[in-house]
Amino acid sequence: MGVSETALLSARDLRAERPGDDGPVAVLAGIDLTLNAGDVVELAGPSGAGKTTLLLALARLLPGVTGDLHLVGVAARDIPAARWRTRVALLPQRATLVPGTVATNLRLPWELQVRSQDEAPGDGALRDALTDVGLGGVSLDRDASRLSVGQASRIALLRVLLTQPSVLLLDEPDASLDDASAAQVARKTAAFAAAGGAVLRISHVRADAAACARYRLEHGLLTQVSA
Amino acid sequence: MSADGAIVIGWWELALAMLFVLVTGGLSIAMSLKLEKDLAIATVRTYVQLMALGFVLRWVFANQTWYIVIALMLVMITAAARVVLKRAPDAPPGLFGNAALSMALTGFTVTFAVTALVVRVPTWYEARYVLPIAGMVVGNSMTGIALAVERVFSDMESRRDEMLAMTALGATAWEAARPSVRTALTAGMMPTINSMAAAGVVFIPGMMTGQILAGADPLEATKYQIVVMLMISAATAIGAISAVMLMYRKRFTDEGVYLEKGLRIQGRKPK
Image (cartoon, rainbow over all chains, first blue to last red; front, side, top):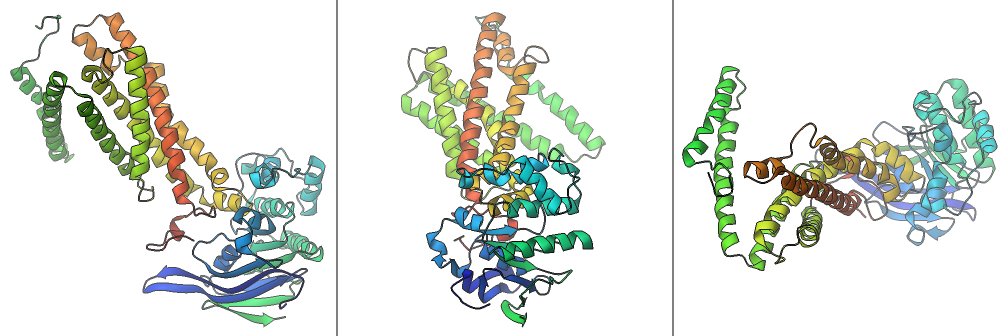
């Protein structure tokens, strides 16, 4: 951790407020964070401390945030928001799939204007990816509404991973998974980091063995728990 | 009976129609529905508003000028825009201009297209034709536009998780909102389409009924009614599309983030 030449994502003095009973409450009260290539960083903290808010802020999905964000040294203001989100990919806690088949969902990112020049993965690549997270028995033609919560959350993770972002922001990706499925997710995220990406994941249920650093967010401030 | 064969309703007969309201009010009291007060107010408003309209139209027909006709159309459009927003509680504030613009776009284009191209009125601001047609265009399209506007905002709110996932994947505001826009436009257009499909089979449309009661030839009344129904469908489509396309973006920040309820902090403008 720390500023280095391989820093993929850096945040300086991130601040955000939300309305409280007695006026605005600082959810992020000046957060500094750097994610380097190969990092898997775990984020913990009490409910309502602002962990999800921090992930949204890093993905530029939260209005009203102040502070500086850089992606591989380039300031956020110099990168269009939609392009930023293709590089700094957030996986929300509630896995939400769009109506349609598994294949429709996995190829959704390539239906978007921001990737109109890119080629979507073929059926073979999608089947391999499904097998890789223990979903080899799930057909590409299966309707997304017939998936279990655990299956849907892994497909949502795959959908993000297939886009090959630089930074992965995971909001409790294994909250609805059994131990075996959670281990597959941990293996996938570790492989993503090993290939040069960086991962910041909120963990409530299980600690990630591959984590190189653990942070705790409380009262709007980030403290390192262990390296 | 009037000269063209219509049976004229006298003031006494008009007052007699109150009996229907008295019966309904009696039922409301007997069944403790507590509708009698609303019913009484609505009845008084019906008499007062429609009688006032009758006098105004009679005066306008006798003294018509282009600016009086346009001014009356603007009054209709303003009132309709207020109704559209009142029926959309999830809509963000400050949309009156957009609602009025959509109503004006559909009100003026469809009304004058019909009066100029189909009815071929001798004077473009012929009040006897322009005002009733504008009333039907604005009134009927208002219902469809209100439905579409209400639906686009309520549907986006119910899809907020899906839209967050899409935006996180790089979707633009339009790409995230598109399914809600489709749902809203379908909802706005469906009553008009259903009405067109059922006309003449399930019911005799109001305007045609009015013309027949006023002594017009049924076939001539039918021709007018067909024009009116097609005109209303076009007005609803133009109005709903323009209103929804002008308004849905107001729920997103400049960076394409959907402002769900939790993010709509009072007094703070999004970045």
